[in-house]
Figure (tube, rainbow, N blue to C red):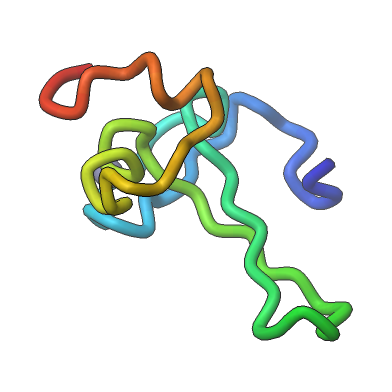
Length: 72
Ligand SMILES: [Zn+2]
């Protein structure tokens, strides 16, 4: 999946709060600058911070939707 991040004990930085945390806990965001772009940038974030930032009208993956928006 994330080619250069095979060590799941590695720490990553949450792209919303800037704090380091374990890759194992991270939601991985695959970002393409547009639909035709072949380059992908991976960003990482806490599940809580993703669900807080995304508009409530957006239907999230069921694994994310289960998370309380105001708690872990
Ligand atoms: Zn965060």
